[in-house]
Image 1 (cartoon, rainbow, N blue to C red):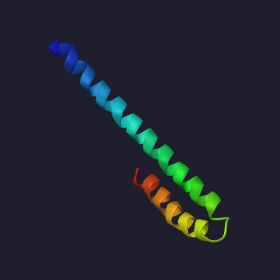
Image 2 (cartoon, rainbow, N blue to C red; image 1 turned 180 degrees about the vertical axis):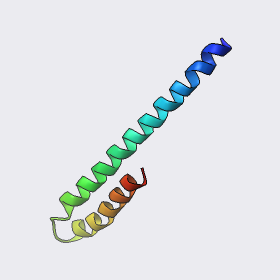
Image 3 (cartoon, rainbow, N blue to C red; image 1 turned 90 degrees about the vertical axis):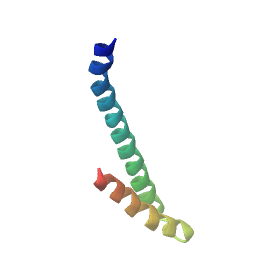
Image 4 (cartoon, rainbow, N blue to C red; image 1 turned 120 degrees about the horizontal axis):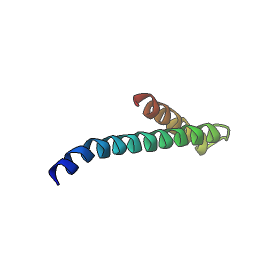
Length: 63
């Protein structure tokens, strides 16, 4: 039992890191795309896009 737990722990850790990374990249890309779409519209949406676009890019660059 102990050997099974020890051998499966690194695999589980690696899988969780990969899943977190993939989801973070997906969130960052979604924010960047949303910011790019909203930046084409005038008014409040443009202000929102100016906030979202750098946040999405920074999030992606931090990975």
